[in-house]
Amino acid sequence: MSPLRPVNRTLVAPPSDDPEGSAAAAPSTPAAPPARGPGAAALRALLRNRLAVIALAVLAVMLIAAVFAPLIAPHDPNTQNLLLRLRPPAWQHGGSGAHLLGTDQLGRDMLSRVIYGTRVSLLVGAGAALLAGVIGTAVGLASGYFGGWTDRVLMRLADVQLAFPAILLALAIVGFLGSGLWYVILVLGFTGWVSYARVVRSEVMSLRSRDFITEARAIGVTDGTIMRRHLLPNVLAPLATIGTLHIAAAIVAEASLSYLGLGVPKETVTWGSMLSDGQLYLGTSWWLAVFPGAALMITSLAVNITGDALRDVADPKAYRR
Image (cartoon, rainbow, N blue to C red; front, side, top):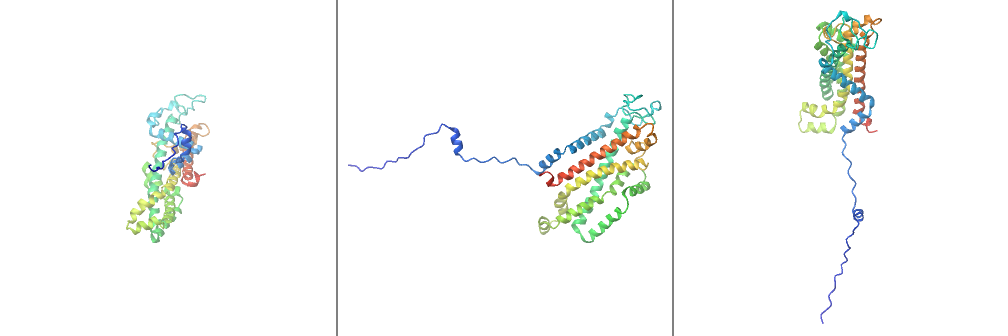
């Protein structure tokens, strides 16, 4: 009689027909949220600011008008026609649809002159801000990084320049060098670098004692490389804000110089020279001064609003609310 062998009674669960049950039994892992970098957060914060969006739209229109002025302007801005002098805007009695904003004292089309004036204003504003930014950034990096006598000499130089009002210093330099578009850009650039230098200096002084700067020095990285690759990228955000605000200041300064006859030559259309020509006709032909003045005000206001929005976006607390 053979011995009894144990029987392996392994119970196997029947396959389930309920897919939901098997899915419920499996451990669920939550989906990872999409990665959102600081650039996307800053862009969302900028788009939430409706006033900044409107300002950017206005600046876009101004830029298009400046670039494509020969295609957009209905007339040559310097063509004179004394038979059409001091014509009012098209919506007033005596106006014409051929000259929507009227004509000036020499019969030149006001709309065309306002459009062409945009080119000079934006060129001077951007050029002066760029030149001042380059000079101020270099001075601020050297002053904040090296410190010592370098810092003292450069900051005393900045104090000396701040002792003179910027517009008076610009008037003196332009009066000495002469009028001209590039002279105006150079003057406004050389008289506006101090604000850049002071901001960059303060930022660099707070960064130079950080660990990544100390480690870069320890491994033999040169001072120029440290300033260019490690310090400069960390000061770009405040530089963008200051540069935007300086564009508006340079536009107004150029208009002031042109108004006084010391800016761009008369044959070049500028808003400042149009204001200077129109001041004698304010009582009879208001449009000669109102339209270039409105263009100057709107452009400066749009640039300032954009600068304020960039300053808020540069602060991380502004878009983490």
